[in-house]
Image (cartoon, rainbow, N blue to C red; front, top):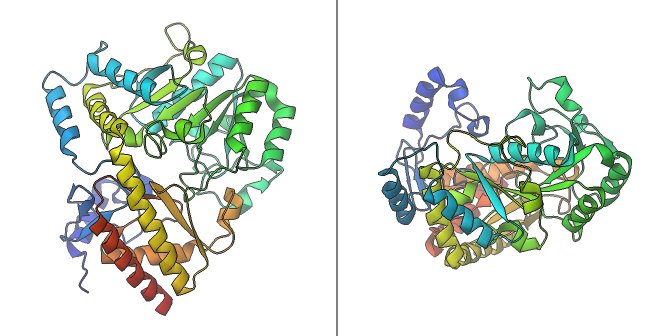
Length: 437
């Protein structure tokens, strides 16, 4: 097969002169000579600068739930911006989208808008601190909640030796530049560890404002919560007066119309949305029950921003959520995802690779070796180099999941049965190549 990226590599030399490492986000950097630039996208496909077409399973790290350039979303945005894009006043679309979220998402009474998942979770932490009068936040190892100081601890980028003993974990900073004082504000714990969580709260509950949790570990191949785990967090938050923050930046409007709240039947006091909410347009939201959201407002708790609730993002969300609420888009994604999961499992089984295909069909993951992981420490022991080798071979054939084994395969409603068939054929060839080498 012929696969060249000469023009793409030339593009990256140009990008490298004006962007550190040629990217605007560290997560987009694959390595010297491995980077791929996007020339255009449509539906379930992207094209690089050499004209290579890829079936897209990254979808901008998950936002593109309906497909690139979805006509209904583009038309709604184009119509809205003719009347203006950003105002220093509340406008119709803000209220309309907030009403949609409250209607779709059980446990959500009120909403405030933001522009990214990072912003949404950052504001949620402040609201939790204001509501409780406490300062510390519990987060779980391997989970990612945004690109800011308070949450860049013990993420999926952290090495095992930096985490400490699982009964007394060490918050491992993921970046230089985080003030030492911030380290004292974060408690990191293993995910799915019932005993450690209960013991920690018995000792430290008086300092804990909030527990922030991804219901599904979206940076760890969609590792699922153990039965009763989310329910335990909910019970302990009620018992100790702690705000439960459900980070649905990845799961929201993707695994069900009402996100993880609907899927698992466990409701956070606060919940954060972004990604699939606007089919790729920048918009996010913080939702919550009336009691906690009442903490937000002038003279109470600061939340806002010039572009919060802008016409572009809210118009995109209005169209996207309207389509998701109708139900067919997520049913299509579910069917395509289930077909991929089944086919991938059969191919890897026939090849003799020890593996597990995990998570919901709309954002599933693949792990190699050992048992299904329950937490980050177990996940670190799996064979991630094998995953990357197979995925890079798959990319060269025309299907593009993220080569990082922590990222799930994201699916969009534009994905066709033919795309699934092609992907499985490419995947079989990729597995054969890697096994042969």
